[in-house]
Image (cartoon, rainbow, N blue to C red):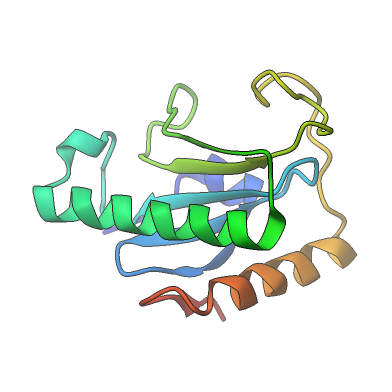
Length: 142
């Protein structure tokens, strides 16, 4: 049975589900940052997915990146599947701007996280649910 890794659960809020992946919003307010987690138990690597799920993951990743690009107009969308601290397969989608806190370097370790306040977090989650509403198969979390 699929379970979200405890660190992902602590560092994010659930936005909703796509056909394959759970969509999460990072609590770090410094960057627009969504994370896709395939809802498959014990999954660690993209190549461990069957071919159809690999293609579905790419479709969902591209759809999320396109929504981020259209709504935010960033200088770059960074997509990465790291996993040194969280072995569960997850894809980071980070909208980067030349004026952001870590530009042009990587975001990891550049600055301490600045979590959204609870008052800021709920409107951000709602905004991403609205933005993703047009993506085929997206179901917002309750």
